[in-house]
Length: 180
Image (cartoon, rainbow, N blue to C red; front, side, top):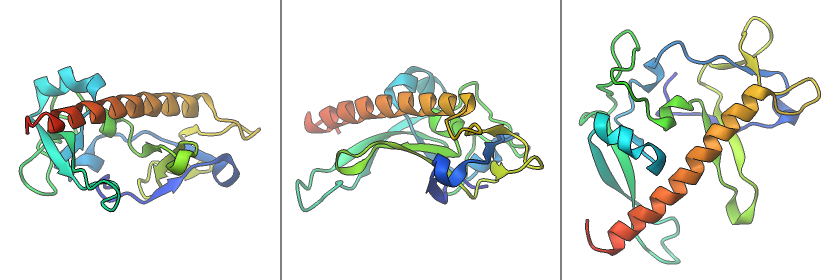
């Protein structure tokens, strides 16, 4: 799997009732990630382990406001498609793993136009599958309700999303203050 080219699909009980998650045995999936988003909740540990940078991002809707934004990222390499923090055997080479890597293959996306947020997963990750031969923890119980594992994943992603929004606000203030 390669987290830099995910095939994200919305996860729901109706279409993924038998889906199970088996955590990756190593971090090889992140070996091509040259940078990762860093959020406020992990900033102090990230700053001790990675060079940090502000990455300019295009405006969400250039027709409306045209405001440029920046994102806080941890630099994992200066070379494209290379992560210097993943060893050849897939081991992570620092004591701190950024949340965006630790929650792979899952992503939490806020709803658009006031809609509800949803859980997405990289279906090409090889970490999700059906049936006993796949193994892993089921994401939904037989009744279609989220399993304990699913609730744990969603809780971690909700905390990440909350911290991401705070980080975006602070980055916006830094940009508006002319510090970049």
